[in-house]
Amino acid sequence: MSTVRTALLTALAPAVWGTTYAVTTQWLPEDRPLLAAMLRALPAGLVLLAVGHRLPRGSWWWRAAVLGTLNIGAFFALLFVSAYRLPGGVAATLGAVQPLVVAGLAAALLAERVRLRTALAGLAGVTGIALLVLRADARLDGAGLAAGLAGTVCVALGMVLTRRWGRPVPLLTFTGWQLAAGGLVLVPVVLAVEGLPAGLTAQNVGGFAYLGVVGTAAAYALWFRGLERLPVAAVSFLGLLSPVVATVVGWIALGEGLTAGQLAGMVLALAGLAVGATTPRTPVAPDAVTDLVPDLRRDPLPAPTASSVVRPVGAAC
Image 1 (cartoon, rainbow, N blue to C red):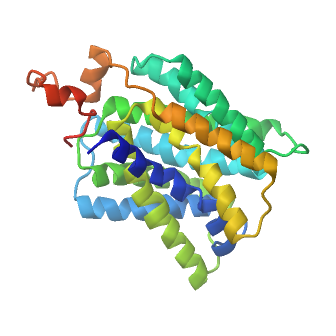
Image 2: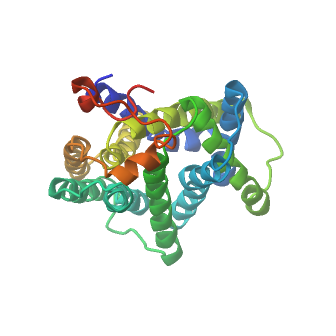
Image 3: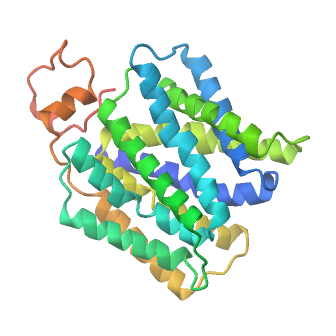
């Protein structure tokens, strides 16, 4: 599979995530953000586990728990805290810092060099998202800011560790491990903070089904697949699509206004995404490679051929 096709498939994940706001506000119960997060992750994870018929073994028990907590459980919870305590524009702008955080963590843990174009593209992305969604009268809340930044760091670290550790099982099973672990982390939080609703309407069930199947199981499978095949810093830039799509959906489906400043921000964000997502791959240090493929020491790879040198990591999986 070509790198461009892989990037386009990976980009479908944040594009789908951009529809979450509209689905949540139109189809889901009000004031139940943590319940929505749990029902997005846990049922989808359990279904994928049932289909895959494989549970983690050895070190993958704690690795799956860590990845599920970072990528799903803690991230969802912190995201909703920040969304409740901050205007949506501020929360989205904090999330747009993710490519810069990922670039720093990838340099430390994956030996991926931080290029000047990556840093400039990251700054352009943050500026563009700020123009797109930030309002001049936005209020700032300390706890909300801390939650938003913590959520950004959690998912950035989860992305880098997902790439560093690789996966020992088929993609859907690996996705199921993380969704189930993240959903289980959210269960006691939901019971303590929100409790369970008295009942759900058919519309609520349809909304949860869409978010669980399309917005979570399918989207995260594409996202983790992209993390295997593309530089992790480049994948992080694709996340800028989420607030862009959310704004467009709000404009088309919900009748929300779209100003000239927002259009300029959208163009700037997409420009930063295009530059950041096409950053050339930096060779990974030998120790990072052995961590990426756990069995490498016992089963060394054959000598590289011309085709294997240009093929993205994981393309044979």
